[in-house]
Image 1 (cartoon, rainbow, N blue to C red):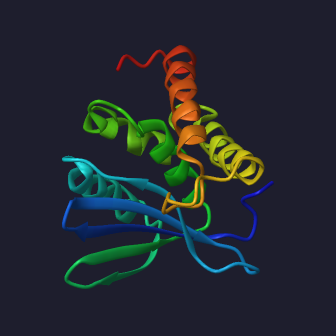
Image 2: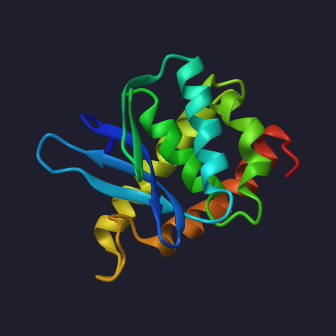
Length: 165
């Protein structure tokens, strides 16, 4: 699978246009790159809740903070779940509506949720290798692919586990 041997970081970067969540990853052969970016008015709130849950479940290896940048290096088992979750909530009108479910996904309360999130991240990586993002895009995964996976995941999650969002 495209996820083996990767390291993962969850970062919040404060820019002139507002806060941006970055999901970053590297393999032993490649340097670190941003896989997923998510901005918006509620990015800081989403980031804070995700970090709180990850810390509560001891899934953060280390953290680093500066004035405009905060990142958390994630344990390998948490990375794919976080990446898949960010794909799920991407392009949501209200991503904070999905926040109560983040902990349920992290602890695999919904049987199979880890597998679904991991496979969606892997699929996003593999499809983006076939159809790379345009040069102007500042992330490694193609936003159009992520948007389509997000739409499909929302339907899947709602049907599989009866989630009403």
